[in-house]
Length: 296
Figure 1 (cartoon, rainbow, N blue to C red):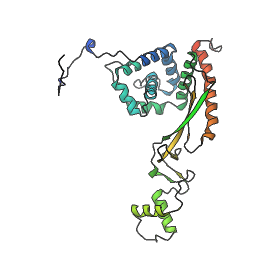
Figure 2 (cartoon, one colour):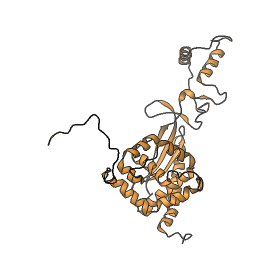
Figure 3 (cartoon, one colour):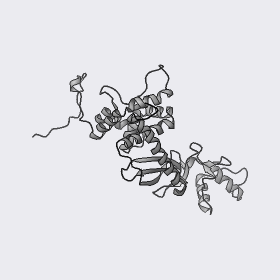
Figure 4 (cartoon, rainbow, N blue to C red):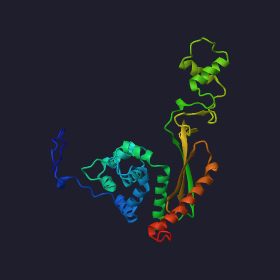
């Protein structure tokens, strides 16, 4: 067989007929997942749940809620932690476009659409989606919940340490150090403001250089907390804690806490939330099975 050679530039066809469009065999996992979602009536259910948050008959149709939540699932399954990354991955993959139900001649949703929908839909809708998935797992006998494991990690917040300010005075780090220099007599009234090098030198000479969360915050993200990450660096962060079914590895709860809360403070709350999610999933399963007495 002769070796093919890549052409530097190729003339693109002005028109491509439908029978010549590229085809994809699809991904077995996403095909089966789509079949499960269809059996449970997911798209009709999520559209009814999201309907109150959209205008009735006004404006152009938005990205269907079923497509939006499928894109979130893609981000979870493939470990993509940004909306830009999710949008690019879905646009670039023929099998994922099939999973989303997007025709080859249509554009897939971009990251700005994902951001807009995320802002429009409240947390309660996302929580209801989580419980619906648990109910589907329970219906398929994939939810045991008898032996669970709890794991937590710190997630870096989208806020910079250099932007933190004092909770009491509103001073930033430079203003705070400048005030300390004045209190120690290193600066007199009327002196020029100290340079960055002078501030760093003074900061290194201080004995008490702690930055407690009770005294400092980032005004752009007041819920973020100063914490040491796994690599030893210090950042503003959150604490994510997951409760897993050890037998099936299904996630029973996924909670977010302040990064300065210890495991002993959050463990009980996470377990209670996992138990509540399972109980709610049991009620949702009755609806999926059509055995709910109030719906019959």
